[in-house]
Length: 137
Image (cartoon, rainbow, N blue to C red; front, side):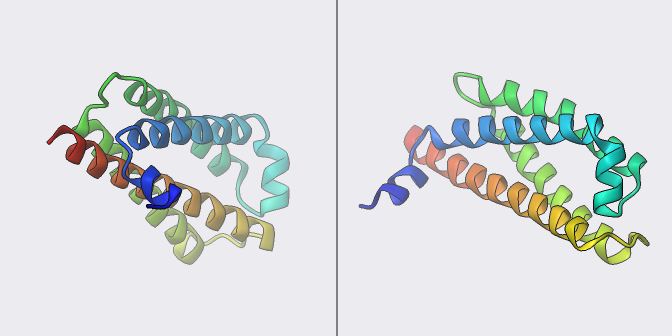
């Protein structure tokens, strides 16, 4: 069995995926809140939108960190985090397609990249939920 395959079947994957998500979301939230004005110019997105997105990520990061640091992460909470990430992805692409904004190329790349990161964490969390279910059986 390969090392990546082993990791995807590890009962610890869920905790690692949640902690990673919390760290990435918290860092992104802090950057968006602290640097919304200069980012707005570079990304071609409204400063208020960037600041609000950052402000929404901060409590999310705290919740994800709390869930990820439990001895056994609550499955319902972990599935809710997966769902939140999925909604974030859909909203990110909806922003680009229907938001009425004219983001710069860097702005488009930023929105797509952060949606991909959310998708990777959601997928890892799903693998982790499955692995933890198998380990508990």
